[in-house]
Amino acid sequence: MSRPPILLVHGFASSFEHGWRRTGWADLLADEGREIVGVDLPGHGRAGRSSDPADYRDVEGRVSAAIADHPVADAMGFSAGAVILLHLATRTPGRFGRLVLMGVGDGVTREQDASALVAAVEGAADPADVGARLFHRMARSDGNDPPALAAFLRRRVGPLTEAQLRAVDRPVLFLIGDRDPAGAPEQLAATMPRAQVRVLPGADHFSTLTDPRGMEAALKFLAG
Figure 1 (cartoon, rainbow, N blue to C red):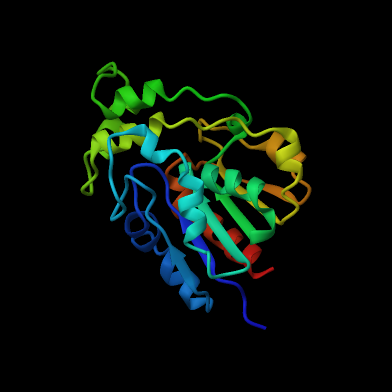
Figure 2 (cartoon, one colour):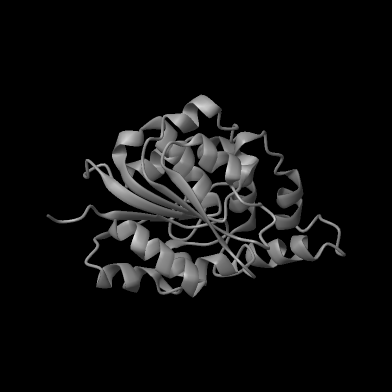
């Protein structure tokens, strides 16, 4: 029996090419015989760009359209991509088989304020803030468009409720570095019926994506 395709959703200020192909994930999954469905989030990569936040109202719907021809798909998401997949899974849990979510913590259950990140992207943050300087540089790398990225951040992303999370009755693997400021998603995993957490010692937010331990855990999980 053939396995379902796998949807790959990259993080903020990245793209399918940058987040999944350059890191080796696309090749690893192809070696496993997987059909890969790659997307560029709106405002990123080769996707359409706009500086109007209203044009980013339904990012989840655009991601879902990538697997419109598949009744069921597995999926992997990193950072913002993981959050988007979580929201999408609460809408239509039956669309997914297994989910691997990296670099996301319990903050998705609380209202988020993206103003600090918007300021970093726009170059208006405190120059002494190293994290802000990092995001400022990211927003200007790999052909990114800062006004489009700022508009993407300004879209409203509401918190997920306990009832929504309990409805995602699918196997979920959370991968998180113990140095990731997002923190381990213990509350998420405890709420979702079939979720587990793997913490990677010594890994920070960005290194989680390429940590060999995380790669091995994800591939074993996806293999069932």
